[in-house]
Length: 517
Image 1 (tube, helix red, strand yellow):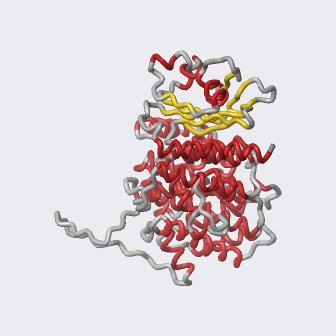
Image 2: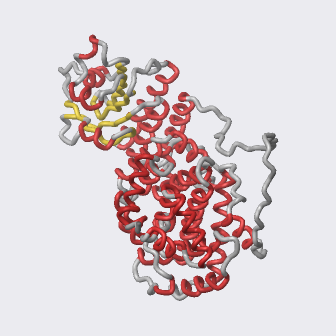
Image 3: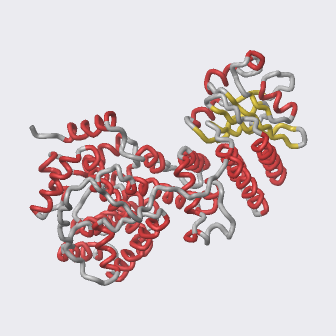
């Protein structure tokens, strides 16, 4: 039976239901689809919230931004919050680093088939290469070049994971017939890789630019680019072309030279030295990622070939390994657990203390009030291990406290309904907190004695079991309020060792507001 585009895409979508999403793809999509402008407050909140939704990713990103490679950005002080990382490194840089870490987790996942991991590694390398080449050619929008190039072969990644038998057949036929895998996919699946990738990208609401750059076009058929996105498409195609050629036992010299010549004709300021420098620099960046992750990828064809190329050595043919005798005796020695995180155990109190210190240091410099409030909120969210955290600010009319931004599940929708009137006569828990200028903790919303002071909208929409309120007042005047909750009853909500830091964060919020008034 001849397959069609619709049936192949349908099989992939069915695979997502039965086999689950492509590993870490949920976080990848969230990071990629944070497409609003970097100076937009909402996009920064979305990015921070996506990263904070994954403890492992949060910890790895913070370790990375405090490594030697980023010392020039952090001014000699340790970065302890994602919000501060975004302030110092910039929105685009943090998003790119986070996306790189997420994809690198896939490469390290030993439970995945080796060809799936190799495909992710090739895509990752093509993204690094596109950004480096784009930088040398001054094409603009380098982060977009990185992402568009990395997702250029998205269709191949999906087939490798969801239809592994078909993928192996495509690889074998492509090598036998000495044609591209994209062309071979048409004969096996009756649809090309790029068509599959674009169809699923639409389903996942990827940007038009990413989908535009997924379309495979022979380099020699491209016209000279006139716009930024055309620049990005040319660089994406070229970097993917090179990476596909490098991901073979031996490089096809003729195809390599043809790719170089075709690309050189597209940019007046391009030459072979620029490309060779970009390839070498990209390889060093990739190996730096491997070193930071304590991860050995010497098994990979593309990294092995790049290593020989950078050293100026001829790329050898890899001989087939001899079959090892079957035995039940296995001697394991010198094994490094590459997935083991730092030996340092970080407690909630550590997170709170470091966050308070970082905020103090930031307030000594010129600062944005929103940035400080975001850092306070993030420190509280992580240190108190909250499910959701929202800061509300008094509206222009001064009649109510309205949700401004926050962290946690479904937070964008919850912020819209977070609103309560400021009323000194009211006995609801929010106004009790404001009127007494005191932190309030409701340890169990099901206790009869507290139910009368909890607003109906909070019980119906948020459905939290334990929550905390931190009022922010300046000269006895309500300015805002921080709300945090736990999905289950939390016996540690009022732990003294943590509450003292919450009081410090409350005071820091007041001080920051005073300084800008």
